[in-house]
Length: 224
Image (cartoon, rainbow, N blue to C red; front, side, top):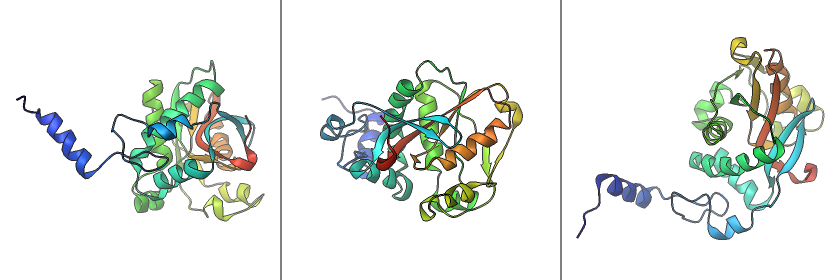
């Protein structure tokens, strides 16, 4: 009888106490899988093309509805940071499709205020951005800081959303943005004001180009 290695024992213990779950339906799956077979079969065949405020092209992997919306909410509010990897895998497909031919130099994320990040334990956009960067074999860099707290965007409506994000972000290092083609990542796009404001600030750093990517786009504003 062949005894399992220490690595295999460790994996069995982790699986037993912290099982991997499908990000869409929450069923237990193998740690190497991006979702259960049923959910993977139902994934959209095409990505969604959106534009952030200011005209920045954004690739969205999934519509913000049903189990896809639940997956993002679990990532954000359900302490399921491990969902970032399978969701980023869907994002990468959308990025390659919507931003076809664009050679990005660096990946960054929409930042979270330090108070909110401390309370949640992580910035979900950063987790997604780091996973996308690894899959695309690109460096990840923190290029922006959210130095002022504001109301959550889902608590504001219409044009108030633009006002709500004005003046809350700032550039961290101009030298890291100058001449670079930047992929800016967030979890959801609705009106696109948050991504647009972040892109506006990045432009102050003399970057060459900015593209955006998210997991989900709201249904009423989706474009195929």
